[in-house]
Image (cartoon, rainbow, N blue to C red; front, side, top):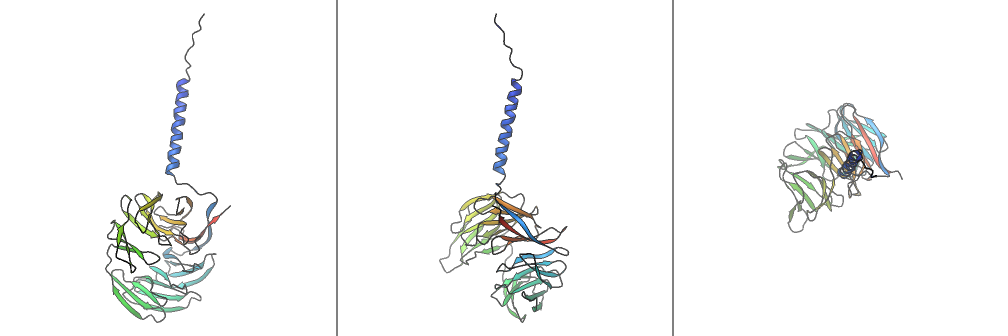
Length: 334
């Protein structure tokens, strides 16, 4: 007698399970491709936190030698803190400062608000100059160790003597929507001619006049940052964080797709990591070669996120709901 073999009823179920497994595996692979890799053996840890009354109005800003961190509070103070977290000075500016700038030798710090600028000696907090003038809106930097340069908010830049407060010179510069970012070695600069316009690189040294565009990206480039050795340019564009070779303008690598609009990019001093501040309130450290995420901190997107010269410490300001100045560092845990 021939036995009739009935088809097994679980075969469609088995096939469905296989199909579901394949779909889940494919989804996992796609997700792994979309999500940036996370570094193993390193982390970002909090070193110190200082409360800010009312929040931050300017900063954070590291001294050029990397020893002291400065931030201006809405309450009108300028706080100087070491990377260890020790507050060394609380300077009284009065009004909330719009900007801060260290002298090149790290001995003095200047703060400005609308119509006023003050300069202090960092070692003991002694005020060396106070200038009240309508030409002042922000302090933009220093021209040498004795001259502080301010901006009037429109088209004029003015130099003031560090100790006497006397005006040295005023220059008219029409900038409009244009952005110029010089390279650290002073030989090249990037130039954007209008909001959302194309960026070009050009020589500013004594060589033959040349310029070339940044290539290989899609959409506009919102902001750029030079590597410390001036060989590369990192930019935030529609593709994410990308890096070009400075001397050719050719796209070298796409590093990382940020979760929100990028507010600032900063290379650490060795050029091994990038600190990316995004609109969602995060400051993320990524590997400058691979794009691997090393760690992150909460950060107010309206304030900066900046590296210390040592290449491992960085600083951020938290949101207005819990305003603090944070000093953090990247450490190897292996």
